[in-house]
Image (cartoon, rainbow, N blue to C red):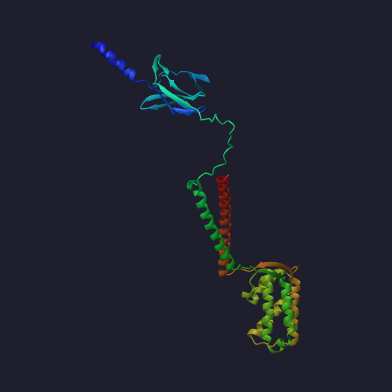
Length: 351
């Protein structure tokens, strides 16, 4: 007796582990509409389940057709839940009783609960068949804030971008542009500049007679500048003997002797109050010209364009204009893109 009781309990537990349930999403539909019947089996994982199979347009019960079948599997609390969804339709008005559907689980039959389906038709005026009503016009959908919310906020943002763009445009207009000036500078060879300076000294005859010290100062300074530019050492900061020592490598003893005579006479006039004769002054001028002609490098006068350096204030103004221009370009691009998006959204909502 005890064994029979345990066996009965085990069978009861095993039976409770399988649950078969049928559900339908609509118990009433019009002729030609569709309803979905879900046959759900809950059992242990790995169980072998056999659902009732229906071909397309096959009747589940007389008057109710099966037009599609789908399967779905999930898990719930450690159990396996398998569903078969049958799409049903009917073209005859009636109340249909759908009996329990039989499912096999591991070879054992289980039957689902019973269902009902009511199919109705539309009322037809059979007394006045000549009355036909035209199709109704398109009905305007009610305004929905959720659909227009993004368009509204984008329009606000576009308006703000437009105000910012106008503000920066006014600022840019008030902030006058910095005009960069270009100068064309002539590059004059050293010997040309030195000979021009000597010609000016030669033309000022009163300088020789009234101020011989200034005369020799200008003459030797002209030679020092020429030597500085021609030979590349700072003759302006050197003594006469140091200059002559650096120029001994030229190898022209006559020219060097004449240059030495010019510097010697200049030093005597400036520091020893020596009074040179007029012909001696002229001879030193000729010697200076001869030295320049014998050592000059053949160069042509050239012109080059030089950009003037901007002041700190002008540089800051130019930087501000560049920053404003960049911000305006970014703002304008964002405004155009946002406007295009708003137009597209409005078109989609109205179409």
